[in-house]
Image (cartoon, rainbow, N blue to C red):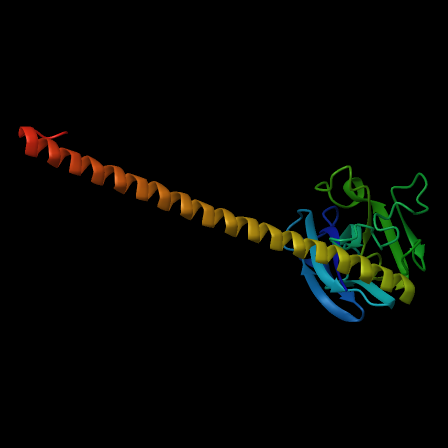
Length: 227
């Protein structure tokens, strides 16, 4: 069952020697689906199709590259389908944390929804990179005091998976039917346009032929033409 994994990311700006030290590998069910090597400090959006299965589905964000305590930041993590907009990721915006009045902090063993040896969460814009918008409030950093691996397991029961499958198949079927109907309407309109063009052409030819014959008749009677 195809779902879309999305998130926003940016290289660490404050304190970093350069963008290139902000790197990451993205794993889905133990397979690397993407590698990120930052070349600038802009905020980017990531989107990738992944296959959802019944049972445990494991998402991992691995800090990579030179570990200098200034790594890639990630937020707004989502896992959804075009047919089911429910986000299957828990705490994907990292707002469920224990920062309190702090701007950032370390959390041994992770934060709600995410396991990590030493998670780091902070305010995206004020702590990590001024390019983040105010709407993108909290980020995790993949290199706290070392490159970290953040893990979330999305567990889908067989019953729920079957429900999702039936729902998605029904919606996909509806989409296919709508597409077929749209194609049929488009084809019918093309045929109507062709028929109208032929009728107009035939009428034009008939009028021209009649006019020519009438001109010949007048010329024969009176030696004049109808022009």
